[in-house]
Figure 1: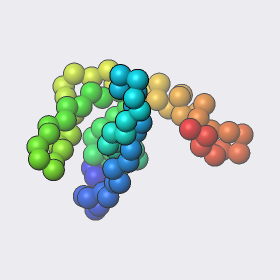
Figure 2: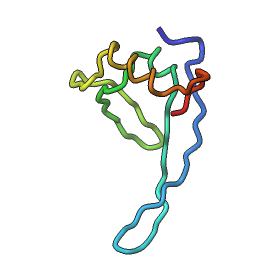
Figure 3: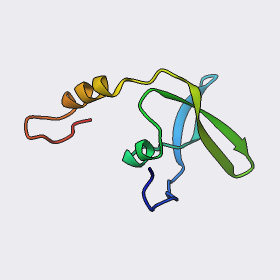
Figure 4: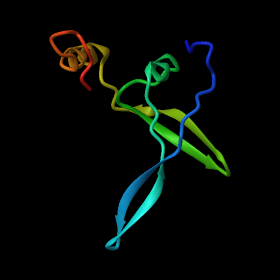
Length: 88
């Protein structure tokens, strides 16, 4: 179940790519957060992105390489330092 916030503001950034020996900037979106999990997206899910003028719609597909929750919990253990702070 997703929380009350149904909108997120995310800044479109720039990613530099090498195109035929020339560096060019391309638009870049990075979305991350527990809210994705609350919305039903899990690590390993495959998504499809529908593209329209000024609009992106992201949907989870039925195809998935989902990491089982048990494994994800084990991975999380390696992502914290001795003080219990996230390092990745």
